[in-house]
Image 1 (cartoon, rainbow, N blue to C red):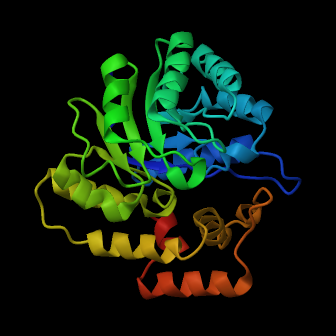
Image 2 (image 1 turned 180 degrees about the horizontal axis):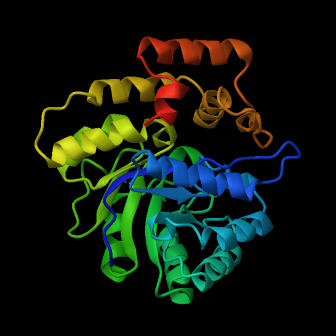
Image 3 (image 1 turned 90 degrees about the vertical axis):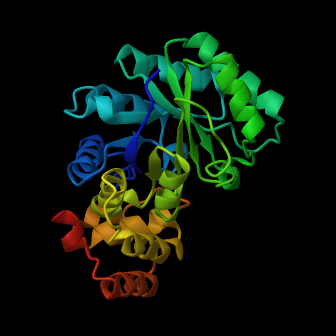
Length: 294
């Protein structure tokens, strides 16, 4: 089992005008944010519009992503509402030698901890060589992991359950497991999480904050004074006033119009919202130019 440490972005998906996935540009975007400071990227997380992208497009991307210079730095999101489709999509990724997966419990229905443990056990039965980061995000799937459930999963599958992305924020302060990665889903939890023993973060806004987040992370490890954490948190707060996907695409569209494309029913910020976001970021001395130059 390999622990995940550092700054990870939930990478964005780039959509063509005809609403198909632009595989090449999506991979280029993931490579860019790693170049800017991320240790790695989660592909087809919620920020990547994963539930709105077809399985065939995902498979096409996996095939091309397997030749990326950063192949070992990707965590692959394969969680679908169908258990069999989740397993089949993982089979494709495993055939291309991807090993780490980000998997959320299926949405819509209500589940007990026992139900969720059974769901992951079926996946691991099919792919015993995989390494899984649990995705804790009650707002999206309706289920919130408990400390007890995570500990039981790790007890049953110590080689396969390697971490949790905590976007419900009920675990990162309370979950302590040796050689296990706890990764909050917001930059505002990065420094506190590190102080509590967390491994890093996986966040949507690391698509734009990678350099700042990496500095906070490095300065913590090097026991240096924290000089940019407040700015990092303020940038996150600016984006949180809007749907994060809409805000991130609006921000990047200032440099490349293709980012204005989002899959329905999601939509880009309207002109007033976009101006408010950009103005609030400029007050923080944070712009698309500074991001691209990082």
